[in-house]
Image 1: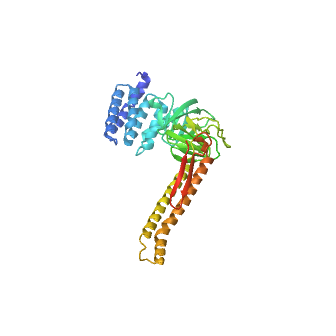
Image 2 (image 1 turned 90 degrees about the horizontal axis):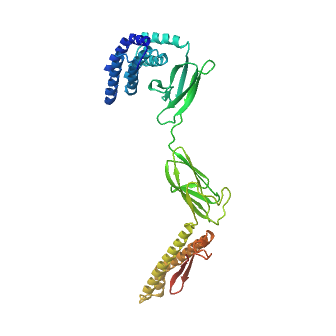
Image 3 (image 1 turned 90 degrees about the vertical axis):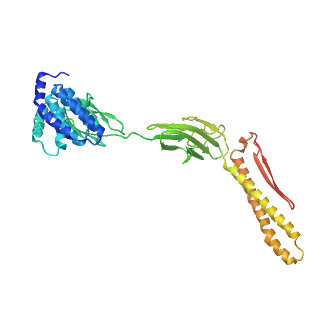
Length: 404
């Protein structure tokens, strides 16, 4: 890179001070061994470039070293950079690095403090000092033209000529943003910007006819329609059930920072309640179904099982009664009556109770099927299931009929 003779002379005058700082830097130790070697190598390249009067190359090497050096090394590097930049009359950048050095140095550097005051006197003639802060702090502020020399960390102060400047704010884990700084008399000289964290979830909104609805997303109950949920990115199965009116299901893809819509539709021929359109489609992709609710079938099954238990209990009572009839020799009527009450009556009564409960459950299930869409099984309007307990003095059983 080429620098004018006047700038070269100023830079050479600063050479000794820079090399003194470079020598001090060579003795410091970064935390990571790999960074130690990289920082040392960059520092050595900077020294060699500076000796060859390739001042901008030297500055670039030192800027790279700042990115990997330890805190102790960074302090010395800021001084190196400030003096080198002052030597090539890059006063705003030089002022920044020397100011950072002075703020972090263990002891006051009188010479650097005087150098800063002298630069401020020169900068005030055509520049205005602007302060930039970010929340959270530590974001990188990228000034035009955006090269490494103009990427500095907030909070910071910077000298700019009057005008408008677009800066970019960058921080890991946060959404980058661009802002405009207006510099001039009457304009504010302090800016504060808030960065939004990079979203890690997306929104899934499920809408549709609301009356009697219940929603499940990924197998988890979410309550009635409408439902809005913050979810981790991924694919989800969405199910909507309407009491007595069937169900709908579909798949929805949730993406971080985005909103996904799923519109549930009632099965064909069903009438929707308030709050939704019964003839809508599925915004996230879905298919309508006319499945009957499962719980009426559970009632029917429980009734059949209970009645069967009654049959077993009655069989036990009948067996004990026969055994008692064969074993009455030598027993009085009172003894026979007592044994009958103890051995035969309990399972007989249990059988009658189980038949009653089983019949009630089965009947309730049949009624529920009729109410919740029993005609969808065969399409004829006939009862899809029937159960009739059969009880007689010498036999017990049940008649079960199912239509499809």
